[in-house]
Length: 261
Length: 308
Image 1: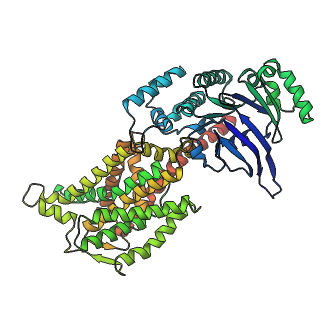
Image 2 (image 1 turned 120 degrees about the horizontal axis):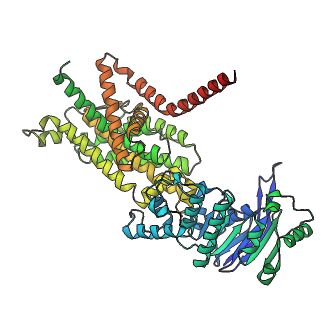
Image 3 (image 1 turned 90 degrees about the horizontal axis):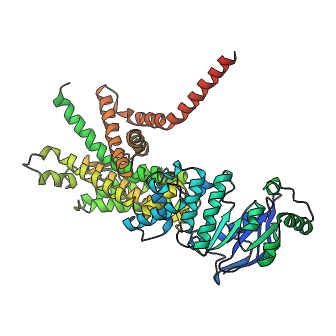
């Protein structure tokens, strides 16, 4: 369903700051896959996501979604079929607009001049109820009043509202406190399963990387260095991963954030 | 000073407040909603006055209103294209359009910097004739201005609830979120500036017809005056719902005119209008910052005193 063919991305080419963020990456994602993506800081995980969502054009290579070449499709058009969540909970919603207004905008329903109908409002309320955060009683309040966790949960709802073909989660729980992160992760699991969504998730938590999804990728210096799925993924454990990393990258995993989790 | 002397002054202030209130509503859309400071406002205001004046002089008083709005819309489109498609800083785009409009406006007025409409039929004179002999006869200007203000407030209140309106508001609030809702922020910025400048044009058109003359300077300083009015309105209605805030914008314009009229009565010379509006804008914009700084300074002193 998603096919990435040999994409390359270099930042600041021709300057002393030149950095190759993606090196000839190829990846095929099947419909219904839930892929977790790990790797040290600067490995190119976020760059890969941004290339898929169209934040910037890639230097070389092609990106196909459902057989359609989207390499040159602008970001706002890709977002019709690709939902994305970021680490920063503030990124996905408009703080001075109410919960209802944010959801109305994200739902993508109706023409330009349509208003929020009663039916829509009921829908939104039902969706919010499923989060179990009491947001359904605060639909008129500006989103800026919500906590980080509430805002990220709302963003998750909004990103999955119109059943995207592909959902990109870029460490979307990393900025939340552990309890809230666990809760949002649980919601993610449920929403992805219920909607049978195809999903890519970056995480620093190796345990949840192995525990969630059906396939795990490891990136290092702009390449995918490990790709396990199916039975192999079920058998592998965190220490195996670290061992693999040492073996494949030729260096020890020197990232506290990854070790601690 | 007796009440009979004050009332006409108040009425004039309310009339002028509601007419320039349309420009304040335009800034309410571009500045408060879209978060774009549109510095083409002055030129666009004059453009509306010039186009409206010329069309009225040609014998089409009703047509002058949509004509002025259309001209304003084109000016807004140009400002939007400069900043969204040609990579020009949004403040600069407004200033550039504003400068260019000076020539355009003189060209529209037939090479002159002045249009005289003393005997020209316009929307105010039509209203005057229509109300001749009724109890409202002396309020005809007030009624025309009020109808315009109310219609624009109703339009904005409804429009900002539509999907397009929400998208425009979100563009000023979080453009990334707009993009991830499959909406192009370039499009929403363009639409927002077109609509906003249509109202600025209408505002200029009505002021020209109200005072039966258009001068090339009719719009100069309008952006500051409108911003001052918007901020005054925001003091009272800033945290409310959109329709209330829109009404507040016009009330802010009226309050501004009342303060100005009062200052004139206290022998402030006419030419001080723009200095007064600048001071109001400075106070309103710097207020929150200075308050914060002041609070920190006080805390600092207190800590030092305790330490000593």
